Amino acid sequence: MIRATLFGLLVALGAPPQPAAGSEAAQDPPVGRGVGDLTDVVEVTVVNVDVVATSRNGRPARDLTRQNFRVFDNDEPVDIEYFGRADGNGDPAGAALLREPLSIAFFFDNTHLSVASRSAVLEQIKDFARGQLEAGDGSAPVHAMVVAFDGELRMLMDLTADYFALAQGLNRAEAAHQVYTEASNLKRRSQESFLQLMEQLNADARRSAGGIGALRTTLAEMLAYARVLHEDSARTADAIEEVVEGLALVPGRKAFFLISDGFPSRPFDRLLQHVQKRVAGRREQAGVELMQTRIIDAPEGFDAPNNLYTRNSNIQGTAALTTTSFQQRLSNYDLSSRFSEIAARANSYRVSFYAFKPPETEVAAATLSERVADQQKLTYLSDLRGVLHQLADDTGGRSWVSGRNVDAFFNQVAADLGSYYSLGYVLDEFVEGSVHEIRVKPRPRHLRLRHRTSYVARSLRERIAERTVGALLLGWTENPHALHIDSIEWDTGGGGYYDVDFTVSVPLGNLAMIEQAGNRTDQVRVVAAVLTEDGEQLAPSHIVLPLTIPAQDWAQAKDQFFAVSFEYAIPRGHHRVAIGLWDENGGNGSYIRREFDVR
Image (cartoon, rainbow, N blue to C red; front, side, top):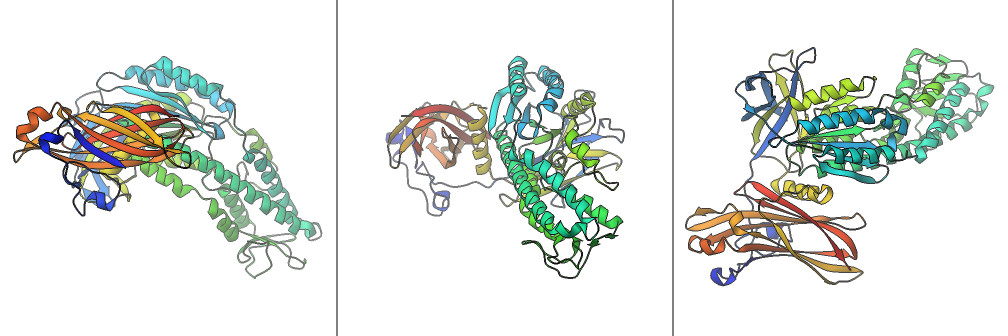
């Protein structure tokens, strides 16, 4: 339930009228009662694309103008309405000189990161962070944060401009233990079983008599391993997305450092590539019929046509392992589209990924691969680096997954963050939640561009809710309207829940009330979001309220308060609430957070 009133003005202005039929209240309940009709506004969305431009040798391309860029939204050319450049060197070449805030998130993926890998790069990370924080100033502040994921997302340091506070968070990350999951044991077992199976299938007919049992065992082990890999990667994806959404509130550009040894989006893609190359080179081997097309019996769940490996046809109980069937089973564990969605959402928040794999080889897998008989090395069963490349490429960032010159990577990132172009265009119509593709073509063509490749079209309603959730999760608050939580009260509900009532207010004089046709008018949007003690995030509650006050009453009204009440069913415990307010006329918002107890 949501209620809205004007404190101290009910007598002067009369009781608030009921919402008009066909309003947002009727279409998307509950939005409550307010002063005037509940309506929505026509939104014009400005899309900003940050572009890093370099020459062929990788040096920043300076002094470019808007004529050097052509922008396409879903393959349709758009006009560049805004052009700016963030570069402290030289003449901005007719572009608006950008001085924007920068926020950096260091995300340690301890589920897929060894202690040795993490320790090898901590000092370089600290040096980079110190340089970035010290480069910030009042007009373009730099903040950084530290989070870690070990099956549970842990905030080790909130966004801060204090390097010494950030260093404490990085030290906490360094002290964390390595996480071992079920995948650790299944991995080695799957590698061993596959290699043994290959040896058995490549033997003569007499030695391959036990191949059907080995095949069934290997398939079961590999599918069990694929399932665990999928679960681990899915949990990591959820944690990454939660931090990305938390950064929605933060103004300016955001750099997300994903520090990980890597994890797969498609289990066993490397294995399939290896086997396919092997078959392409040798179609027949002693005791094994490869690439058969006739139908034979197969293990449960596997199709027989287009066989990759089969038992010799004169052996009773013939079994088949096929490329097509195995890929079909593995498609249930494919997360590549999930990471594409995360990249598109990150692009909507101006979050660029800088995916970083510390330079350490996996000795056990490399040693095991030496046992493979042919020329191909089976170093990894799955591509662990594809996600790191994908997130960086799709968001205009960088990935570093090989090589030992870590300082070179951080120098490149620092150059990116300090020199870029911002291209803005207007999107008049869009479908909320739709994914738009972005292409930017350079003039001349030899220029190399990096930029976000997509974004999710979001309404103002959704953007305000996302920023409120950001305040809820990360504690990043800003309050130019002096928004205030007046009271938090609760009554006993049912089923162990309490009906908790939040009342928030804002001085009318702090809103951009515009005089029009004898009235002062504005429209405000207020959002509430709650995070319970057990980590459950309750769905945000919205209210959209036009404010209309007769001009002759404004002198009295501007010293009064506009108040809104939200009600949630919440269990006993220590919880957190965030409130967001958007002033349509002023084009700005306020976001506050508070912790509270229900006892």
